Image 1 (tube, rainbow, N blue to C red):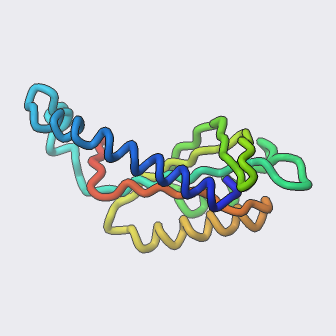
Image 2 (tube, one colour; image 1 turned 30 degrees about the vertical axis):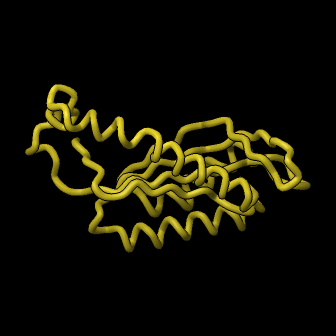
Image 3 (cartoon, rainbow, N blue to C red; image 1 turned 90 degrees about the vertical axis):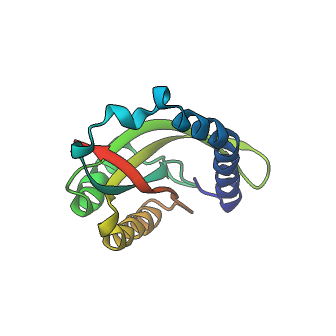
Length: 156
């Protein structure tokens, strides 16, 4: 994820998907037979959480792509230190359209974080540190951030 125009396109697509699917989701939630919350016992929901996704591209101009070993080192030394409670990493194939109209494909990593809403300020500082460190370390123009926030109901 290296170009601002591609970030704008991704955000526009997310907004469009929300606009298209929100009415059907609201209708689903209004039908008690389709209510997913009913399957989660209230006592297991302890607090309100925020979900943040970070998309890390690996392609670099004038350098080899970020290797699995480099990613693992960054994950261990930077990300895990800030979110030792847990996280999820998914390997992905990403693509974006650059300013010239070319579609660029690259290996990417999707980081999913869930953290209590009450810890949002500290988590936000850590997330921004991670994004800036990745951009600087691996010569990236951006790290896409998507926040799904509160409430995200979590059950352990």
